[in-house]
Amino acid sequence: MASNTKLHPRSHHIEGYDFVRLVAETPELEAFTLRNPAGQTTINFQDVAAVRMLNRALLKSYYGIDFWDIPETYLCPAIPGRADYIHYLADLLACDNNQHIPHGRHIKALDIGTGASLVYPLIGQSEYGWHFTGVDIDPVSIKSAQQICEFNKLNINLRRQKTAENIFKGVIKPRDVFHITLCNPPFHSSMQQANKGTRRKWRNLGKGQSKKLNFGGQNAELWCPGGEIKFLTRMIEQSTACADQCLWFSSLVSKKDNLKPLSRLLAKTKVADFKIIEMAQGQKTSRFIAWTYIKKSQRSSYLKDANKPAER
Image (tube, rainbow, N blue to C red; front, side, top):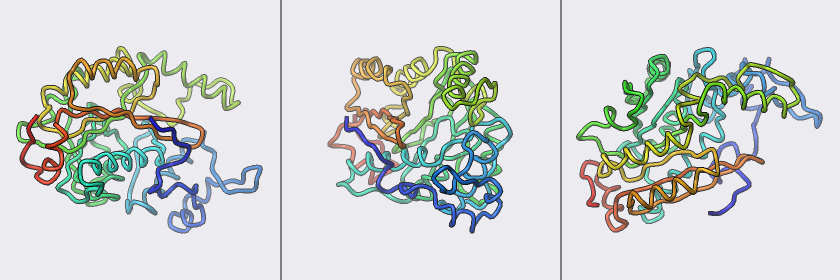
């Protein structure tokens, strides 16, 4: 598991934020800019409105999204980190495609918990032309995602998960075939734990006490019973039911301590292969875990024929 210190080499954001370009293309951003002690242009990243405007500018300048917004209090994602996940997933698919990153709408991606921001499908469709299906349990998130699609004339499938205990069941249809699934799971086990984590962040930032969630977030986005480990355990166990319908399953793992029990579970589940891939944004290290039930000898043919599941 290699350690990284920078954003992915293909990231548009590897050299930082080009505020000259961003303000030129989204003039509303200028009102949120300020100078840091080094005299560089930046924004106050503890200001949710400023982060939302920065995201709007980034999505417009680099990913061709003319309209983007989310409801108040909903999770406002950090674009560079989200883009990194997409780029590393592209590298993962390239490993089964003679080191060529597959482009085009015949590559099908399933985003579990797509959220009101629809951020992964927006980036993945722009960067690689993949066709996305976004799934969420929250009707407000689905409505917000639909509005983003309509305003930008995007062809992204959106499906509502109606059963909280289910992850794939009910949203993967019998004839569906996906090349990749992705997920940013809820990592707290309760709302109280989420609030505690937020207060710790604010103290570390020197902002004192605040009940305001850093970058917002609704219950389903932040926590679920049992937290991240319970959610991902359920995801792995339920993936066996649609093992032949997806080349690679994947999910972010926020807590490093969860990697060992998840790895043991994957070994017990008898997957054909699994990988842990590290990413980094500045001083922050993140990672995702990916697993497949498809034999290595069958994966390249799976990529070439999206409508014919490979053998296990």
